Structure formats: structure tokens, C-alpha cells
Length: 186
Length: 251
Image 1: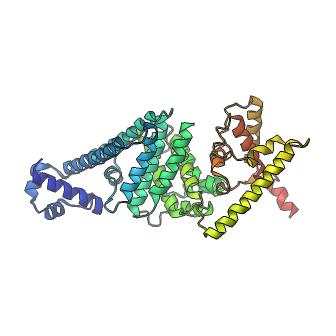
Image 2: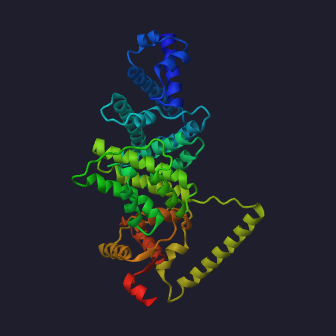
Image 3: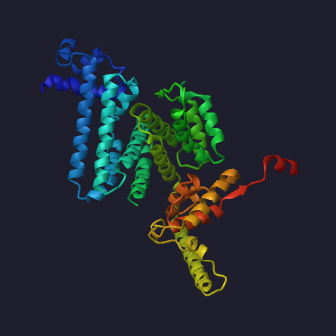
């Protein structure tokens, strides 16, 4: 990947997370990235394309980070679903946490027909499938049902945390997740 | 209709139950029913800046009444969960999404009503000593009770808490259909009265799940021991079945 393209992408990611996607214009992105509009449009034909690429990269980074954490964990497969929330809690509470790309994008682009909404919706679904896989590995019968409950908890907590940093939302979501996981094992 | 910002939704929640916990949980039932209703234009529009959002304010008040640790936070979480679940049902045709969200909400309320008590070490020792004396007395009473002709086996479950906290798993023996039917009838009877439910935070953790599922939600377990516990919890619920007019005329 070109260094300039990468720079534009990382600048846009930061600005979208801190200022909001709709509130961040292309002029601001190029000014902060130290480049020109012409260069930006050379790599991304439209702002929408840039947003979609930011979402894809953010989600891939998050997924790779989680995979790496869980794969190197010494926990048994049955316990990894609970450990998922330990990792998410660490991540949400870290000073560099800016929020979840797909959750913010989905809220800013509520129109179902919008490609940005569609991608964020697909990413939310993929995350739920990922939880369902962990639930299956933990021999939970209703893996899909539990995955939906946990993903709703997680997304609700992240949204509450995005509104107010240090809210403690993820701590309670983690405790609730444990209650749900223990209940689903019975 | 902007359902999330409607007075109708709050009015429906207000009249849904006499318990603040159940009014919070009714959010998911009311939205579910509304999404199933015919001839209604369904649209879920989340309010990004929730400043003075009437629904979140109402949920915050109810959460405070329910005795949760952080009412505003819980209100926000429930609000976002309800939106996500309603959108899931509306756009992805998942009929059970609001029911799953309600289960997650029950767990979240339980997590927020668990009290963490920090006490000085000296007080903690005193409390531990008192607890040992009480447990000792109870065990002594139970030993006496087992040899006493008026011993009531039904009382056993609440006074002998299993140390592993797995009440629901204490036995896998299924209750008889008659017992299950009788319990359903008790729950139905309770719904007809003006009942004051017990606060979940007063219960040991191991009882909370049985309490929420069986007493609060009315999802009766077929497990015999769960049913026994449910019956004992129902004994603790105070109900007034006097018709409102009659009660007024008496006073």
C-alpha cells in the first residue's frame, strides 16, 4: 500500500472517530494528512469510498487483534467466549479507545439503502457470527441465540461508552454476559 | 411515527406493571407488539444526541426506582439494545430479536443490582462470626426438624443454600404436570392482583435466575427443584386481591 494512501486512511479513521463521519469534510482530511484533494481522489474516487475503506480496515484490525488474543490464550475453547469480554473490556477501557467503526457508521447512516449502512450492518452480523462460533466451541446449544444476546449487550455498552468515556458500561455488560453464558450452558 | 420519541410508548410502559423492573423490561415487549401490529408505519429512528430524550429520562427514573447501581447508564444501554433489536426484527426479519434483547436486559439489570459492600475488616469479622452463629443455629434447627413430626420438607430448599450456588442444577428431576399446572395457576393468580414483587437484589445470586425466569417472566421451569424454589419465592410476594372499588369503600 502506498504510504500516502495509508496516511490518508489513518487520518480519516481518527477524524471520523473523534469528530463523526458526516462532520468531517474532505478538506479537513487532506489538511490534517498534509496532502491535496487531488491525491485523495486518486486513491479514493469519492468520500463514500474512503468511508467504506476506513470501515473495512477498522473491522479487519479489530478482528485480527481479537483472533490473535484468543488464539494465544491458554484458556480452554469452552472458556474463550467469556474471555472475549475480558479482552473487549481491556480494549474499551484503554486510553486510545475511540469507538467501534461499524456502530458509529450505522448510527450516522440510518438509511437501509445506503452502502455505508449496509457494510456496517454486515460487519455487525459478522461479529455476531464470530461470537456464535465461540459459543459452538463452548458446546452451547443455542449458539445463535446467545450470540445475538451478547452482541446486543456489547453494542449497547460500546454506544453508551462512546457517549460518555469511563461510564463503566462494559463492566456491567461483561457481568451480564457471564450470567447469560452460564444460563446458556445449562 | 417516531415510536422512540412518542408519548404513547411511555404511557404503555407506565401501565405495563406495578414493578419498576418489569416496566423497564416491558420496553422490549411493547416494541415487539408494535412491530407485529397491522397497518402501522414502522420506522425506528435512533436519536444520536440523547439530550433530554423523554424515553431515556423515563428509563433512568425507573432504573433508579429498581435500585440499580447506575440508572442513567442502564437506561442508555437498554435504549441502544432496544433500538438494535427492533432494527434487527424490522430489517432482518428476526422474530426473536426483542425477546433475546429482553433476556440480555434481565442479565444487565441483575448485574447492576448486585451490591458490592465494602466494610472495615473488624466489622467484616463481626459479620462473619454472626453469620456462623446463624448458620449453626439453622443447622441445629434443621437437625431437630428432621426428627420432628411437624418437619416441612418444602422449607429445606431456602434454608440450605447449596455452596456451589447451582440451585437450578441441584436435581434434573422433572416436576409432574400437575405441579407445573399448579404453579402456572399461581403465577396467573398473581398477575390478577396488585402485587409487590420482591427486589432481586435481596436474593442470593443463585436464586436470581429462577426468580426472573419463573416469577417475573412467568416462564415456568419443568425442573422440580426450580419449581419448589419458585413456590417459596411466590410466598414472599405480597398480593392484594381486593377489587379497587371495594378497597376504596372500606377506607
